[in-house]
Image 1 (cartoon, one colour):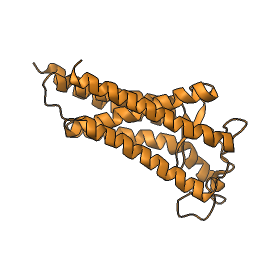
Image 2 (image 1 turned 30 degrees about the horizontal axis):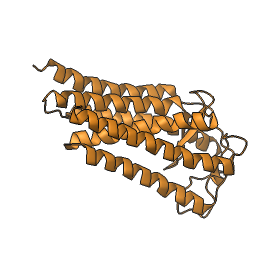
Image 3 (image 1 turned 180 degrees about the horizontal axis):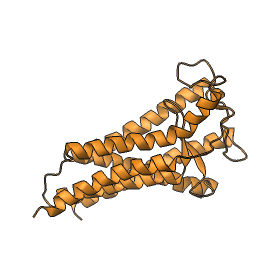
Length: 237
């Protein structure tokens, strides 16, 4: 087995295990707060639980970054290995939720993805598509590096990746932004410095519309960048 194959195999196993660990915590939380099954609007939780959850998520990201840094042989490979770990972790998080809780009902079931600076929401398929893009990016970089090429991402490709990522992120925030614009006098944006219980401000918020157009633009920019990298190195002899 080639060293790179062994590295990717262990990185995959680690990320799947991390996905199960994340799922197990969510199973406990849903049993406590959503005994009849998860649904919007979100149920307020106390500030100590909110703080614990925030730092748990931060610790998870640090571990995934660490896996990428320890596995990669150069800066770009470390970065894409982090993305790969994140993607596998995210996909298997949903796989294990389906196995353990029979949730989500479908790939278009709404989920809450993140909370800072505002809630990120979207159908389950959307973050899974982002994860698949991360995996593709990783495979392209590793493939050409193993061919002996000094792979780099040029300025224009970085711009596409950055703006594509920002656009995709905004698409996850879009529905909540519209909600705030319509009911802004009655709600605020939760922060860790707030004295209120987490989700108090969004106790009436039920996602209504995912901005697929904005998400598609973001994903499109990311994929154009990845294919640009692939095309550049494929042309080289």
